[in-house]
Image: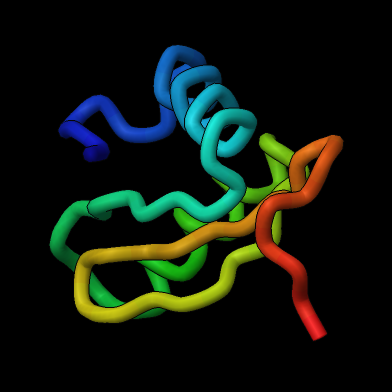
Length: 74
C-alpha cells in the first residue's frame, strides 16, 4: 500500500522484494485520476524491472518473471 509519502526508496525496495518472492504482485495506489495512478504504477514497475499488467480502481497489478518462473505465459 502506498502512503502519503509517495514513491519512496523503501517502497521501491519492498515492491522489488515482493516481486522476487511472488512474480505477480498487487499494489494499492492512492486515490486520484486514472492517469496519475497509471503513471505511479509505471514508475514502480520501471524501478523494479517489472511489467504493469492491470489497473482496476486503486489496485495495480505487476508481473516480473522469477529466475525459475512459476507462472508460464503463452
